[in-house]
Image (cartoon, rainbow, N blue to C red; front, side, top):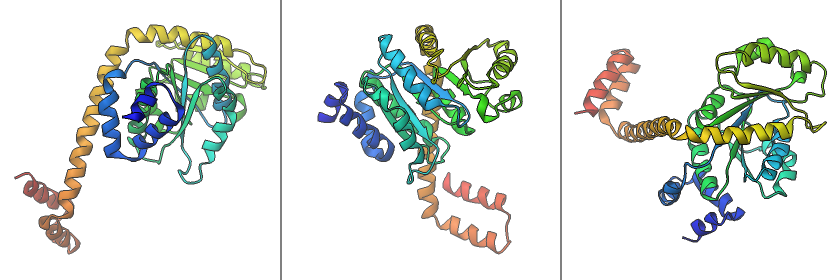
Length: 305
């Protein structure tokens, strides 16, 4: 298979094609994963998240260059929460990260498509493609938007939360959001007013918690804190590598359950679409001759004979 051979060599065209197959072509995705699975699970995944406007893309652009200089081979997957058709965030991310592509760093945007679980499936398998192509670490960037964050923190070995004093982040918004998932908290755009107050709030509220995460200031404009951040990430990659097997067991268990449940759901949808009992009880339900729970029990019993 030419695609796999080119993928192994880290050819950008092959990586792009494989990830597109992973996102859109279920039979093709299964074939690729069957071939590469044994050689995956080795890279450290870094999730970088936080509220919109935190300057994550520009920060990642500078950080991956610093990581490259520390003799790692990073790649970036940017989760696009906007329309898959308009591609607003994709263009913005690509422009802000264009400098890092000159250093041989691979960047790809993935549409979230608004579906819980779809992000996880697409990301897990895209990470595997990048692992097979020799990238480590793999950085996932996303906007701090509810369920996506939870999904990404489950996939990441290291989670970084980025705040910015200019977006009205305060101790109240921090409490409401991302306090449980971070290994590192960054106050980015630290050249702006309000930085010290936000830094103190994050350090006092989150940094002193039992988890004891690292709290740092960074500024792309002043190019400050970024080399320190990259060095901490590299050190953390080494320590997380030791406990990766244990975390991977939990992740593979979760993934396996999801796939099995999804297979059942697809099979059930097929059965219900062609099932006469379903149509019969739907008519009874519309006529108010039966309640929804009783109807569902009757249909379930007829399917599990």
